[in-house]
Length: 208
Length: 208
Image (cartoon, rainbow over all chains, first blue to last red; front, side, top):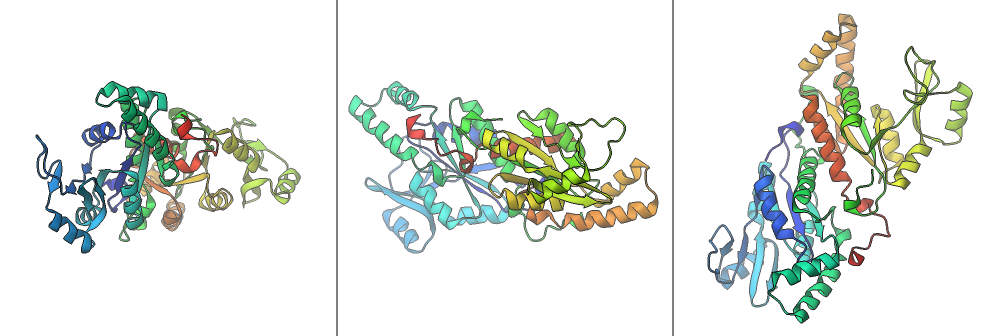
């Protein structure tokens, strides 16, 4: 959303990353409902839709040929192969949003964030979410009841490794309570909308 | 104030500047009451105290000799000569606050802001305040009823010139309504407290 307070400005690509289990998806969903003028980016994937998934809302479901053609044509802002499917974010909607002064929220992993940061150094704002502690993260993983002890052990080890990516990010939110984390994300969004560096050349304050 | 959410961090020097009449002093005073953990910096001056001014609250009143000695010893973060008195901000309280993780608000002019930015490139956050329009600013100046038409004309011309300094600042707040401006400043303060770049080396998220 254009915040006219700051004058005519470019849109912002907000990127949320976290070690698995830190609560990123919960924050991201709540943020889209709570923060005005923030739109989710819809990813492309080559995997088949699961029950309840809707084309254009959850994902754009495309063929392998289509996906590979887009990668080859440099149409992807970031992409990765996970097991036997490809996932990625197309560039066109991001470019369009930045030009229109609209803000996008991307919920992506550390590698994806790194690709977007490199392609949009001036327009991407990156936020890392950490659990309040790894004991708490362990409790959350166990509470899901979906994995055995060995799988939980592997996830925890990976989460600790992923946590070491935090220095590459602009902001850090320690997710103790979702409401507090949303308020912190809202502050980041509101502040970034006031950044002088995002104002367009046509802004001339002496003509106000 | 230390925001433990972001881990142990350095303090921040927030700098507020504006063309004369834009409402900077009103915002700065209201912000010190409304935003938790923000302390005013007390300037040094060589001029005599005016009625009602209190040493250590409004200014530290010092002699010319004392002031000049401090400038010579590089003890000033910024200073200027205005008419026949010197004004400035000592470095020691800023250095102490940054080391202690405490945040300072400085209400200073464009030249002072430029000196602080050069001395504290990582720890200063600069905010420029503009009036919603120069017609509105003209109204405010006239409303004070303290100056004649020629003086108001000179002030307006100077305010337009000063407005052109906005690109040197990090954030822009257009001061249409004081409550909104305080909320915007609060968002900037809250967001900057979450910046990864301010975390101290001892922060190790994998030990959380």
